Image (cartoon, rainbow, N blue to C red; front, top):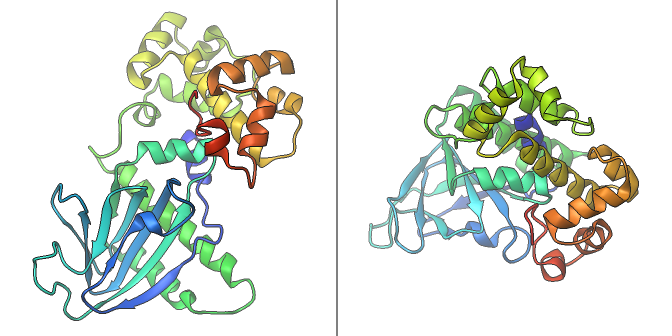
Length: 307
């Protein structure tokens, strides 16, 4: 699977709470308070169907961003942003005719999804186009429907919209971050990244990875490090530990089974590597970061980075 595809699969609108709201000025919405618990990472989607909205920083920094009818903006949370009917408190009545707004909040859970969250800027704006407008019309029609399975229909439509917006942003020249994403298009590094992600359980060596790109080990090591920011085998370990963390908390597989899927021949070697990376043993991570656990309090961080 393509690495970018894997990141997008980690964010799903599983009951994301699609809302269609008719707003009369003055009005404000704060993305940080609309999903999950305090401090939880999230992506909040706003799409004006009629009227306009303004995205501003509560601390007064930066220029206000206008979000017009048909546009879609995704705000990374938690953050200092507020969406309102005017560019600033002293700017008059702003959208005097009111606005109709679609909103949805995606909690970002799991280490793979957190990687995507970390790549994004504070907000992503996708200007309205014909394809986006058509999808917004369908979501508008589905927002108040109560037919059987309606929640699943809304969730899948929201997933489609989120993917389209993020893909548009990543494809836009000069906006996406450097590193592995841009390296995917490199004729040497791209095939190696895809090979790692397609089969993380293979016993990769620098030589076998270099063979995927038909280059020498030295050439691969130098080019990979320059484009991605870390050596190939370091990146591989990082990705394996990211996948392992999600397998431990998202499946009932044994530690030994997770170890094999992460490319480790035995559970002992895997446990030692996992503890070096995450700061705790796999069994402790599963207990602390599984469904219903207070992961942040118990471990300190279950976001795929060392504690």
